[in-house]
Length: 118
Image 1 (cartoon, rainbow, N blue to C red):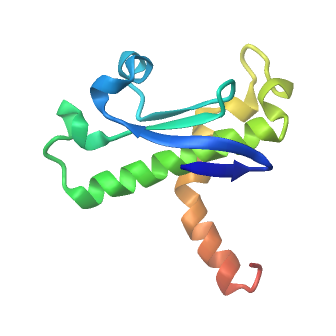
Image 2 (tube, rainbow, N blue to C red):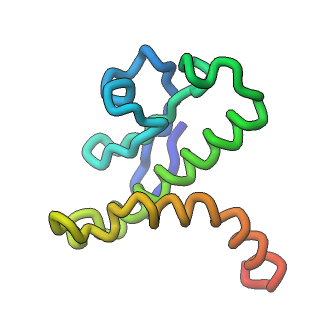
């Protein structure tokens, strides 16, 4: 699936646990590759740790991971990937901040919508 991120097309694809060595090695649930313009999301059901989880929980986690990786893509395409780079102060790469946006976005969107801001 192609996603437009500020005019750049990112390919969003899902992989099973055994299909992506980088994801397996790093124990990621997803990643955004700025070089290849690709967002890769792990099919959690394919992992031993998530094999028995409820479908609703898996879907919620995978959607949050998609939002998380899209936030990275938007920061990258805004020119912030390298401009914020410092060994210990790369704010645009800060995982806690990216998580915050990914987790809170649905609530923010609803508040914006209800307030007439969208």
